[in-house]
Each structure stands twice: as C-alpha cells, then as structure tokens.
Image (cartoon, rainbow, N blue to C red):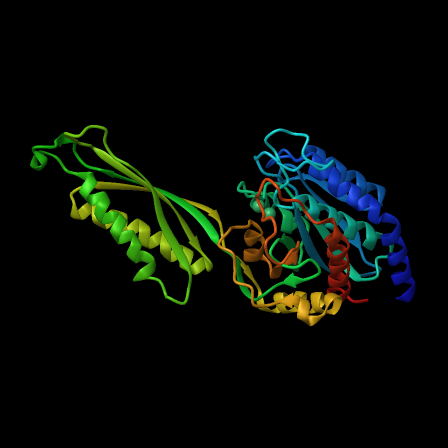
Length: 393
Ligand SMILES: [Zn+2]
Ligand SMILES: [Zn+2]
C-alpha cells in the first residue's frame, strides 16, 4: 500500500506539467458535439501509451478505457464530458481557442484532463479490487452524448455497478467540493402547441373559430400547472416564451402556436408536467371548438444523486480536503446535465469541484471563462481516492 502511494505520488509529480499541457491543448482546440475527433484521438493515444485497453466510437466519438485492479471485483464508471460550446472566446492567454466560434467555456477540457490523469495514475499502480471504466462522453451541451453511449450499449459492454461524475463549479472555492443527495440539476424539455380553429373576418368572429382567445386562456391555464397542480415543496417551471398568431389587424387567424420550456428537479414531477400541459392544451381546445396538437420534446432528465453514493462521494472528498470544505447545502442548479440519463439507470453521484473564486468570478458559458489548472491535481486525487475507497483491496 505504501509502495503504491510512493509510486502514485512520484508519477503525479512527474506528470503534472504534462496534464496541464494536455488541458491547455484541449482548451485551444475545442470541438463541438459529436465532432470531438481530435479530442478522442488525444485521449485514446494517452490511454494506449499507458497500456489501458479501450473502446472507441461508442456514441459517435466516445472513448471508454478500462483499468483492471490487482484483484477481481466489481466495475464502476467515472465519466468526463469532452465537448465545447459554439461561442467566441474573449480570453487572450496563450491557450485561447484557435477556432472561431468554438470555446471550452464549461471546463470540459479540465474534466477530460482530470480523468485522463486518473486513468494514467491508477494504471501505474492499480491498487484496487475490480475494474474502473473511464468514460469520455461526447456532446454533453445539449445533444445527449450520454444517452447515445447508453443506447449503443455502454452499460451492457461495461457493466458498471455505480457511476460518478465531476463538474467544475465557479462560485465554489478552489480546494472544495459540493455534493448532496437528490436533485442536482434540472430536467429541460421544450414544447410547441398548435391550436387550430377557423379563420374569419375579425369583424364577424361568429363565422370562425378563434384560436387567439383560446391561446390566451391556455397561457393562463399553463401557469396553474405548477402553482395549483404541483406539490409546492417540489420545484418546476413552465414558461411560455413564444407565441405566433396572425399577421393582419382584421383577420382572425386559423392557427396560433405557443412554445416554451419546462424544468423540473424530479423526474416524476417532470412526467406530471408533461401530462398536465398536454391535457390543458387538449381541454382548452375542446372548450373553444378547436383542435390542439402538442409537440412535447423531452431533453435531459433531472440529474438526481442517489443517497448512498452521494454520501460516500462526500466522505471521500472530506477525507481529502476536510469536512469544512465539502458543501452539502448547495441549492440544485436549474441548468441541465445529461449525466442524469446515467443516474436513471445506475446508482451514483454528480459532484461539483470548486473552480474558484467563491464569488465574483467568471461563470460557466461566459466568453472569459477558463478552467482553473490548480484544481486538476485535486480532481485526480479525488478520482484515485474514490476508486480506492469503493474497490478496496
Ligand atoms: Zn455547459
Ligand atoms: Zn458542463
């Protein structure tokens, strides 16, 4: 055990600069959803050089490497996202994006580098009993790379008992973590509702079937889906953000289309919101003699931590940085995250690692954002400690 620690510490000391260089290289070469070819090549090259068997092209550009422990045991999965955002970087440092209109503004470059570092470190001295699947997933920023990897057999081919993910979090001090049971990130769905009536001269409304008055009633009714139909202790948002009716002042249009977004922190609330929005549209349409078409598109589910795994990951973090640097009281974010798909199938937890500073810093998806290289070794040590604690020899 002590020898292993010496091996690891020596390896980490010799490789730290290379990992920072890898992180900055990824930052300078951001790639969008399902186009992370260079990123996947870099990851695969490093895993291969470390003697780690791997699978490529799972979920498009996804890469999975597996490190075997010294003794047999269960498999767990550790996940990093690889994709960047379609936005212009405004930083001027040497490792700024070389691609116009693409930027690593969510720190996925850092998540990837931390997970590569963890795989390489554990491969040097695999002091655990079991197997660790290092899951590098494409397309987190909206296109559901996690879902696609799962659809293509991620958990059949790599039967993980549990899964974990780390996301950097500006607004949380560097050197600290946050994790809690239950919801961490919200679900994010979209809808379009078309109310179809019969157009008419606006001066003779009785000759038509007016979808505009029905749409006004529907917007009001949709506000009651959360306020009157959802448990007030459970969060949900229904926002109508688009409305398209006619063109003329004196024509009752044939159709009105409403669009909006739906968020929830609980997947049963999400299911209920979808059902109630659909029922409201159909009911209002019937009441006004119209026909409703509801196109409800499910995006990411809520990311909901499993209690035992969240507690466990919190203990691992606390053993590294001290109990006072592990926040368990952070509010969930109403942003969305496709690791939620994995947590619907496997027990696990999603943690935030502080990117610092605690306040006043640059937030995610900002053109001046950068992953904080100082937290890279902490992320690596967290992954190592989690594997050692979950798969003890
Ligand atoms: Zn993001
Ligand atoms: Zn992100």
